[in-house]
Amino acid sequence: MKTSALRIAALLPIVLAMSGCAKDKQMHFAAGVVGSGVVKHESGSRLASCGAAAALGVGKEIYDSMGHGNVDVMDAVATTAGCLTWEIQF
Image (tube, rainbow, N blue to C red; front, side):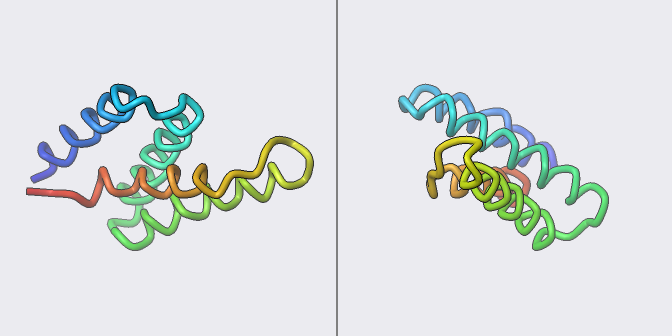
């Protein structure tokens, strides 16, 4: 099962790149994959792993709102979507 989830994790960035998804969204997605992966590994909790990805995305947008970038809700969505690579298993 873990092998299938890792294959999906490897394929999703490629699919996003081929679909014309902005580089920024790909970076947010990758941050969500890494952040949720670390939390999943350490805690074993699927809910905590997605919560971590969501917190990373929202936190980054809060940081952007303080004059460090452009706020984009879809950036937070892309970051949160990164947790799905660890949750989809066959």
